[in-house]
Image (cartoon, rainbow, N blue to C red; front, side, top):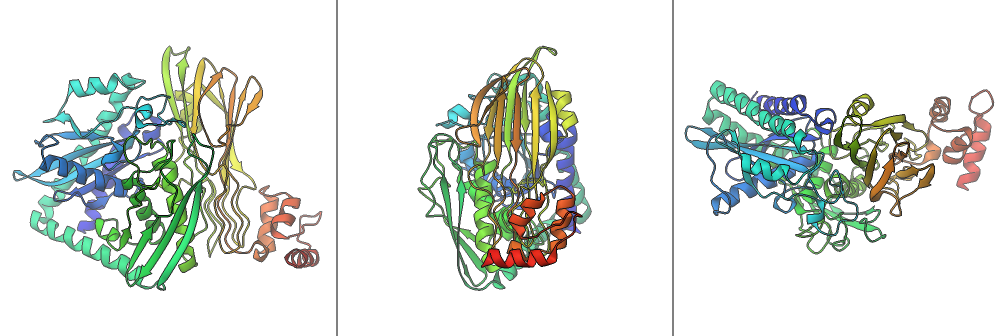
Length: 572
């Protein structure tokens, strides 16, 4: 009962945040998360079911950092009604656009716990609108960096801190809506938490929180104990860092011993020049969320993380330090880390782990001036992709990214807010990797700038390497970006990353997101399933023959004799 009540309090915070927010990326895409954290060490007590999983470990680290900074005098001590704001990536964060609020909850004169949430602000200043600077070489180029400071003091917004923020970001006049929504979510959480404490009693709730942590740890350990002891190795690749056009390698060795898993990323690439470095908090959180995908029944609390030992990847791009740029860490690098975990663990748990999902948030920012409305705008588009096939069925098409529950904002909302027109928005046929169970399909969309001038920036991934197939399955299709300026196509040199592309009215941006990896030998796929996909237009007849060895006759039926012959010849 208490576990469900705590979860419900977090869910209501999430709902409040989205309903009250101004920006579509929060109000519609739900790029936010809320949670309850320990007053002693910031450890996670509960998080909303609809919050982004990547923020699970991150907010635990940032809350712990605030508590530590208060203890050693580097941060002002809290009073009732205070809310701290922080987005510094190196203090337990992600990228600068993910802004965290943290509020102590007072009970009988002491801090009972902390409530914290994170929301993706559509702009935080920096070199390009939206903050996704694809070629940044230092964090200062990415935007305003805030250490933990009190934005609200005893319940009142601090006008000086607010003025500093507004003086350093674009569309500052629109920011107050998201700030008020983010604070309101914490206040709703406090009210719900007080109701729980009043109903069950403080001592009972404290005992229950401790017991829930122990049970989450025990449940995760029980799952791990069922895995065969050994070392499972994998690799995943980032297209480039946006500055040096060479791939970055995520090298992983997972050692299973008894009831623990040890993750070693020590062989990964060195720190990079561009913005695809990952701070430690994001690296840890990426491992946690990957294991949540594998064992979703384990309750979300700090106890679930205890059997997961991640060796600090010092000297690699997965342990970024100031002033390394990090705008791609949360949305892209974290998903390569998760992909590496999936690729390792599928060797140990083939019936439970999927092939690689699309693994890109498709970060596309467009900033400019709308002459019809006489105001500036910053549009931020995230997009889904295909999930990987698994032991029992095909992958989901156009699912949300690996790191979250966030979804693409509705086209109608985007066209209402910004001077753009979506010329098409559809499934990307054929993009799923072939397999006994194929990967899901990505998304294809194209939008046109209707008026004024704007600048486009992209920080995506999987443009060079498609999501990995497993156990004989084929990789999913790669991400594609094409910008049509004056009717002439332009493909970014780094395929999935570029910034400050000037656009005028009539220019278009076309994006194809990755499909999921295939699971198992494609020639073991049921021919009837292949013909069903052909009838739906997912594959052409030649594609069906090439990818799956299935021959379809003129009537749309499987030519089983020809299919058997083709599969045999190709395998031979």
